[in-house]
Length: 386
Image 1 (tube, rainbow, N blue to C red):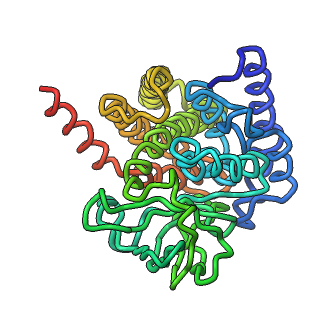
Image 2 (tube, rainbow, N blue to C red):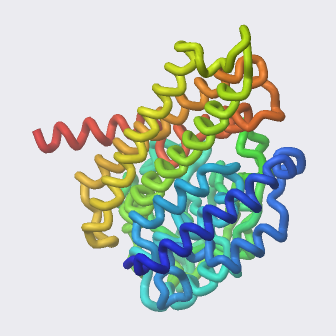
């Protein structure tokens, strides 16, 4: 699945222009009001951004992973909240259906996802099950042709906007084999939302708890129609999601570096631009080198990802994805820190973009698997193949 080269080049240039001319100028509004303007969301729908990864057969654009990371690199150069509006639709929210869903599930949900009519979120994390996802406690008990769900999901991105959730619940015994993936409509009786989380950064993104109290879901809503496969689905979904987080991290680093280089060029001390002082130039140089290394790694892993069937889980690919996420997100943290340092006191003031990106960047080392989880995945695969 991939868009032809000519069409993709046109799409990429359109996204670049949209980021530069529409999204960047709206960053101050976003920061002040904690909300993405409705007109921008409508523009995103018209551009097809809600269906970037959905196949053309279901009304989407059908990007390959290599193409998707390039788009996410561009989107990473503005406030993360803009991409977050549709990020779960093209990523973890819908990919489980796309990879493992039945033909009926794909036909029912994917066209509405691609158009933006239906926003989907991914509900895996719980108050006592984050990194240890296989320990989730949300239960799904079979009653006739329905399952009754009880439990709480935490930090669920786009939950306040979602029309449905790809939600993991325990249908069997302990461990990964007892987990099933469900499609749960947001208007299901017994499903309620907690208050919207107040976060360190990423203004405009919406996360909250999803609470299930005797929520009844048809058995036909198990993704793939077979219980016990949910953890495998989640891990495949997260592989692609982590790679795209890596691309976003590189885009954010590129924006921070551009802001820092511009400031170092314009800001004068002791009669000359501060960028001419070697210690400032060295910070810029380190950021440039690390950014190029991270972006090269992300693109190489994306190409390898495209070389395998989407529905197949490959430990070697998972290890490489973890390498990309570990390096790219940790790299972003260093670039953002240097960006503030180059700006001096101005870097600690909210009116400068680097201050916001410094706060926004911190989350990327946590969600969709912390840096420590990526280290464990890498180490486990190295020992397995030793």
